[in-house]
Amino acid sequence: MNIFQLLAQSARTFAERPAVCLGEKTFCTYAGLHDRSAALAAGLRARGVPPGGRVVIYMGNRAEYIEMLFGIWAAGCVAVPVNAKLHPSEVDYVLANSGAELLFTDQPAAMASYAGTVGVESPDYAALIAAPAPFTPAVAAPEDPAWIFYTSGTTGRPKGAVLTHRNLWAMTLSFLADICPVTEASAALHPAPLSHAAGLFALPFVRRGAVNVVPASGGFDPGELVALLHRFPRASFFTAPTMLNRLVACPALDDRAMSGIDLVFCGGAPIYVEDLRHALKLLGPRIWIGYGQGEAPCTISYLPPHLLGPDTPEALLGSVGIARSGVAVRVVDETGTDCPPDVLGEVIVAGDVVMAGYWQNSEATASALRDGWLWTGDIGSFDAQRVLTLKDRSKDVIISGGSNIYPREVEEVLLRHPGVTETNVIGRPHPDWGEEVIAFVVADPGVTAEALDRFCLDRIARFKRPKDYRFVPSLPKSSYGKILKTELRRMLAETEPTPQ
Image (cartoon, rainbow, N blue to C red; front, top):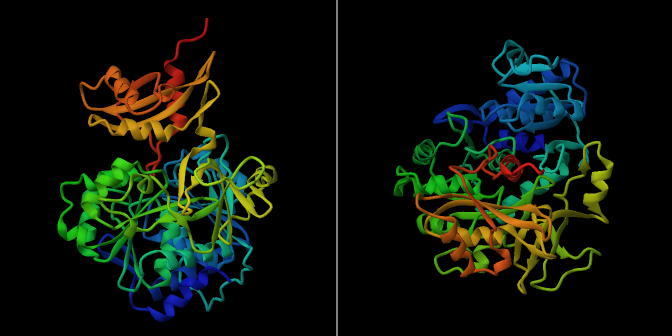
């Protein structure tokens, strides 16, 4: 069934309720969101975009974003949202690789060379959204593509994970099964990019007739988010760990704002135990830790809020919890054999939420999808109660002297130092040991490499401690708060002496 029906059903039941707000102002009701999306679908057909045609969305968070998604689906087309902070040349790759028929953007000047560009504030878009004649949404098979999610490209060119209508329905139903009750009185705030998890999380809120709120700034500003929490009680929102850290440090965050929070969905990158403990002290059991990938959107495992508190064991705080509804999760060795409890292996996943494959990339698809299972590339282990703990991405493991060193383990130790604000650990080639550990550190004045070295030696094995500390004013991050190891590796390479 076409995922557009999710909106069509809610438009009948909640016709006059606010569907999308821009800041505190209503942009459209559910009846209006349905009609605008249907009009956009009719406009796409009139423009000659065929069923199955890919439509790229390259823009920041705007009130129009959600109508674009549903309009694309109503037309039987495929949405291709991309990070608004990508360089136009990177968007060119996505346009070419996906074979896009059309590009919606709020940066038309940057994309003027692409013939199918439609600026969201242009007369072209106004014409597309003009009221149509009676419109019948396209019929979609469960396996038809609905969303192509392009990976961040940390190991080369981005790959397009093809998410089907079945995948999006499965994700939505799993959300409603596992997470807090969502009703028409709920609100989803969107300070995080709608091109990623936040856009996917909008779907269950649409199904329940809740309001989706786009901040007037279009992004994450802690003070603005606090003001929206005052205006919209029963609010939930997605954050990356760095966003959560900034929110709990915001002086404006008061009891009124905190009492209005239903849940904070924290994902996109691992959250460190010390940061989670600090957030829990302030927010209490309102933080929902989730683990997913673009290839299994937002839906692999979760750590329920009721398990989180001041007395929660560190091992549980450092985990990603238990398998989501409708998802099978295993930890296996290189042969695909299940690992015993507490033995590390690769996390593999099966279920209706798993992607169909990578767009026009049969080799990558065959590597990732084997015998019905998605091989995630993440290294982790189960405990005896089937609680999953991740160590790192397999490509980020540092192998020194034949021993595996997991960056997150070293980072967790460094973050216990009272003078360390942020850190990230990568490997550097070493002629004798293969690799050695390098730590990039954001720290208070006066913190020295010698002090951090002593701190690590008191807490982890000598071979795991960093061999070099690079003190930096900040760590490079993506638009949704993930620390960019590729940028750290570039920074490291630029400061290394040139071999003679």
